[in-house]
Image (cartoon, rainbow, N blue to C red; front, top):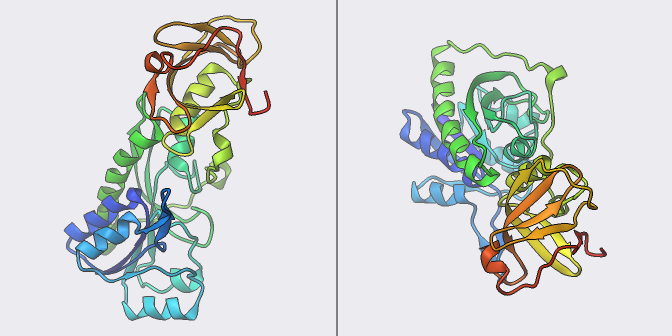
Length: 313
């Protein structure tokens, strides 16, 4: 089949690479525009574009997809099927109805759970022990289309969103190729999602990283993992921002105000939470690298009784 692939970040790369190894023909790729990045704000191409260019596949990067010009360009590729993985925009009817075999999406959750832009992060934040990949036929809703194939993947207790995503992405590529093979063979029956079981995974914002110390230590430990590598969990000691990268939760009873540093030793900083203690083990401050607490404490005076919280604490 003639396939157009739509995707942007690293998560989508294994799906494109799996298609390139398959028997079908990727005739074009659509990706988000190059974006400024880093201190120099130089334009950086998305990972999917780089893979497509290395393979000699034409790439479109429209600023807007609801234009006659983009639809005409897409039509000129004459796709039998459009495959989508983390493209970053909702497709509208003229695109969805263009390919005879429809538009197939690779989604990083066990739908109908975690519909939305950040399913990997929210699964970790919410303490799930498993997640997976769902392929589905797309409609105009937010991940609401009929499901095709689904495969589960365990979440390890020390997984972050950053370590889980690559494993899901590889699974997504394999499941996408299998989905297309079964669609061609006519052996795949789409299954309607149970909307009553749906949960959402909205896009995360930078401010979502601010630690609310009134939450339980167990919830905060999951949140730190789910927010890594972006936007990252953080708190403030006075005006100094601490990015918190690795923690361990404890059920120890305590009566201190949430956010209070209750103990400091060579390896960790223990902080009171709404329920239990959070053992902070890896920190990063402004203009520094991530470092273990043992290294951090050599250059920072931290004592019991200090209060962590928002900037104005």
